[in-house]
Amino acid sequence: MVKKRAIKRSYPSSEKTRHSPDMPLREVILKFACNSMNEKGFRNASIGEIAKLAGVKDPVIYQYFNGKEGLLLSIVQSHMEKGFAFIDEQLQGISGARDKLRKFFWAHLRNNDVARESIALILLECRSDPKFYKTDAYQMIRSYAGILTGILKEGIEEKTFRPDVNLRLIRDLIFGLADLQAITCLVTKEIPEATPDHGDCMNLIERILLKKPKDGFSGYSKRERILSSAIKVFSSTGYNEGTISEIAAMAGVASGTVYEYFKNKEELLLAIPEERLKVHLSEIKKGFKLREPIRKLRHFIQYHFSLYLNDRDFLRVWVHLILLNRRFYQSRAYESLRQYVGVLEELVQGGIDDGSFAPDTNVRVYRNLFLGTFAHMVLRWLFLSQDVELDKIREIYEVTNFLTDALTDGNISS
Image (cartoon, rainbow, N blue to C red):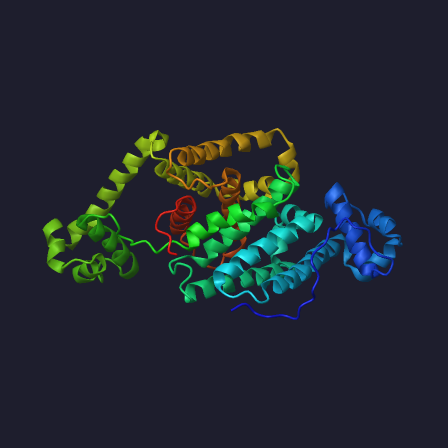
């Protein structure tokens, strides 16, 4: 359940409104610091200029904040405090995880729209700095993400959301989409506000969360089920400890059936690489010559992730110095990204046109879902899960399923 907090009822208003004469001096300084850092960038903004705008002497700022870094982190904390209050207010009286999720996401988009300067600093200054993830300000963001996690868990418990989802990936997907919606609004200026896209965003998110769990062996032959089960058993218990009976039970066949395909455990083991290499070779040859939109999309997603996963250094540069860099979107280099994601947009639009994908899909929002999910996963891989053993290949497989589920209406529970 979502944890309740003391509520300060205040519908968010634009940050550009002038401060009232009785606004606390600390808030006045934060306001002008936010304006200056957005206009000139964090590096070029100066304490002297901020003090002048706020109508105070430089030493006054140091009475409240620990330099320019302290100002930036205080802007984040102030934004998050208001965000907590607004989310809490909006969730009051809402029952059912599905409605809570819809309201949570609307409130998040709305808060981003009206607190444009704060969210721009968070996305384009803080998120690209590795040191930010060790601050108290980032811990507030983690606590905020916990509200979403609570809603997702509630939906699973009440059997509204499918039980087989990876909560970390779903969080990456939802917040990644919201971040890219904000960038689309604030930086590339494709849209004036993100909130009107709420319905299109929820169409994609709900098509993922409301789908019935897939049978892991759906459409598999008995031989394929045995091989897939053998991989899982050998991976978890080892070759020597794994048994034919355990593999058979997981595959849903009798032990004797395994011996109809493989004369012993060793032959079964050696059949695994043989079978997988055949599949990989086939997929490489198919490439982008695939005709079915859903298979082309899966290939595009996995190809995209594999390119970056194989070059960790470029991955770090891409997320830190490029994707979350305001200047990138104003440079000629941005056209390269537009051409690249244009392939994805054409692919999705083609699937809509031939009836393979849901007709109400907003292609631009789906593109943001794809790019935002990727960015959030990479940030987690690089900074937030260094002490946790991650199966990145499995996460890529899972997120590929989520991103294809977002486009298809079939097999959704009511």
